[in-house]
Length: 68
Figure 1 (cartoon, rainbow, N blue to C red):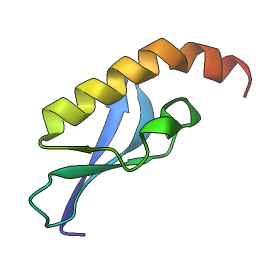
Figure 2 (tube, rainbow, N blue to C red):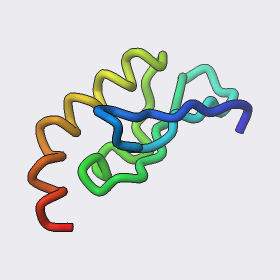
Figure 3 (tube, rainbow, N blue to C red):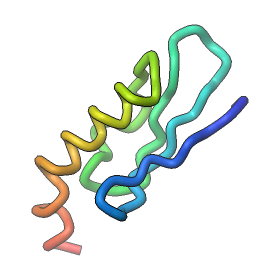
């Protein structure tokens, strides 16, 4: 791992974007159940990965948190 950035949406820590050194981009390490299906997803940049995680969280996050 060369570098990482926290992905937090609406004050909730969802996971980490990890720069692995490959040319593929950033890999997502999911830490929140609502975005678990995106674990290991790869996007070319942080903005794109954050956007994908935010959309997924907002679509699934409220429902997932009720059952915690």
